[in-house]
Image (cartoon, rainbow, N blue to C red; front, side):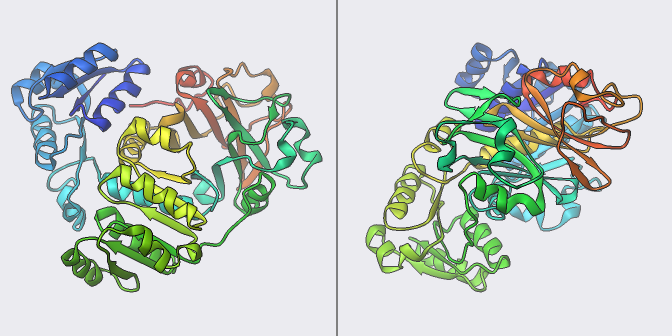
Length: 454
């Protein structure tokens, strides 16, 4: 089975990188010689210099045997045509297209099976805003993923409670809080990544992923030093697509918002599209404007202009002037990882959101759901335990589970069970597994409901 990736930009390159690390047969097509060379030099993947909509190039890349084509160039037209040509040459191929123009999404029939036949259409800006909305539901979290129809959540957060200054063993956490029902699934400490066991210690400033039932989220967050803070006011700088989409979502959440934009004509257009958002024109002297608009009363500040360096500086300035939290739009994958460590609370990366969405789609199959954390090289998987599975009917302590993976939760009859060594998974249980990407093939062997990607 093989995958064709059309476009070796930020999204295409990093999707190909992840798939090649998982030993998938990947071929990348791009018209840029330097990008093709980068793929050949750094990835275990083939690369062809050609146009992705070229029938000859697609044949050369092996479209006849390909399971999927992922078209993620900067051109909607190229992506759509690539998928259409691929569909003619190989009618069974699954098609994924990056589409920036939101008009294509206004009518669901345009991209559906009856017309353009795109199996998955991705708009990076829309994916980014959806990610922001999820995180706004749990202030203080950097990642939020729902399982079991939202009753169980995986939360990514920084540990800031002073009681963790000298470290606390995970097996002793219950001595420090009366919260029953959460599991620390992963610990990130500097360059070290840990799938923890009971004897591992948790320290202040660690970044963790924890799994808990919905009703436990607020007390758990407070225990780790991230007390709930209601978002009452928001400010957005930048009236592009993301700025407008975000303002609409904030209106739905009934969060009062101000949106600042430099283009006066654009301000008029935005004001016509929004209902309750206050749209303000500014000339560029934002330091004075932030003071005039009482930034110190803002619970969350979003810098989403087209200049990512400005976004970083504006976010830091907003924090300095009193904004409780700040978020910055960053397109560059490497840059976004660096920015996360300098005091900005949320990094908004549309490319990363699009990559995660593609990886989720690829991994759909007999498992119930998958959440990919590209920057962490990890995934959270929700699978149904079948009677013939190797994980059913024996204590967890007797399972030969890889070191890079952990069973984070068992859900039985909508009840969250915190796994212990003597816990036994029963048929029809939902099992949430947190695993580093390089261990997924080992986890597969334990499941009858394989983590199939195809």
